[in-house]
Amino acid sequence: MNPDSIVALQPPRHAWLIQPPEDRSFNDKDPLQVKLAQLTRHGAEEYAFRLLSEGKFVGVVTTRNIAESVLLSAVLKMIRDEHVDIDKVAEYIHKQQKPGVTPPSKIDHPNEFMHPLASIVFDEIKKHSPPAVDAQAVHKVAEMQQQISKYQRKLQDAGIQLTPTKHRQDDDDDDDDDDQLPSSNKRRRKQPGTSSAGDHKVLPTPEQVLDVRSKVFSDNLPKSHTNLQVESWIKSFRIKGLQAHVDNVSEMLVAYNKSAKKKPNFQEVAIQYGLPMGLAAKMNTKNLTSVIGVASFLAA
Image 1: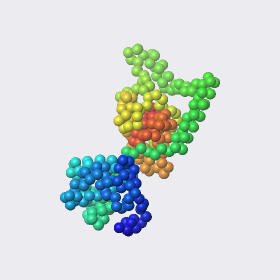
Image 2 (image 1 turned 45 degrees about the vertical axis):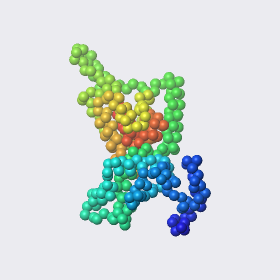
Image 3 (image 1 turned 30 degrees about the horizontal axis):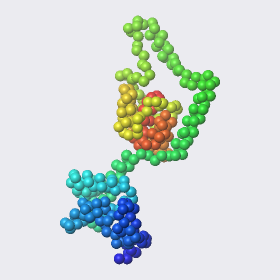
Image 4 (image 1 turned 30 degrees about the vertical axis):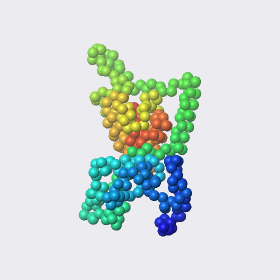
């Protein structure tokens, strides 16, 4: 067999087994002469080899690491256990996407035939993948936090109040009116962190949400980056209207990210609101926008 007729690049001349180290039965052999059974986990007892005795097709897909191998094996096992016909699914997707158009031949054009189905699987995986960590942005935020802490200490040493209490004129008038009424008729004042049935939060614009003016989170933080922990964390506030606000903000930011010319860095925004850098780096887009939604609600 001529190696040049198989691939454009010259294959290695010798095969060396990496795992398991105790099996060296084909070390220093021509790679094209190595038997497939020697490369499989269970050798000739590999389950897929049983199809050969029935005259059925057996394919080999090469992977570059254990994670790829485990993922493909797990997906294929689920498909086989549920008796899903991949060809019928791929053909059905073609008919849905292009009604009236004959799907490509699965024999003459197998890649084109499976491409829509493969795209759906990939998009689902991509949707749950965490965003790439922007090291430069994280470093910039860290420097900003150091500067803020430095100036806060200087102001405290000088005896300057960092967050003076704001008194609205209408609140003062309300207090005066309340003092003139019997105690039973005095209006109940809303305490910070609570919400009454008549409260309505006006949905801010994406620019307002992404323009961080102050750090909101300090000690009350999600326990981890997972969807379940973030959802439990949001429920722990027990503030009426918070969940609806978070859902609206999250949906708004995702749409804004798709249409904006300059893509917002949700990691950087969440960190500026007070989320730790290590936690922000592990979160996916859904959880980052949810955290930003909580912060915009509390900061309003």
